[in-house]
Image (cartoon, rainbow, N blue to C red):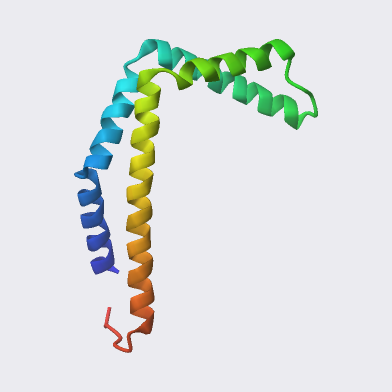
Length: 119
């Protein structure tokens, strides 16, 4: 297990050094520094939490809050910082999918191997 952990940490270090991760980190920090975006995102989160509570109680969220939510979503989606983060997140997610696919191939290859390595 120590060898697996060591290799996993190495993969983690390599991911952290990848251009996809670095772009994601920069975009995330950029959005965090945008006070207007943060204010809107915080309000969206508060509305979502309120909507969840109301729906769990079998109630419909007020119409004015639903309209505010839709307006805020539209405003946030066109903000350059949010667009940069969404793009960077998508690229990072693709990198992680490729990593997971390679791990799955390694597992498949290991299953087919008749050689059993001692721990």
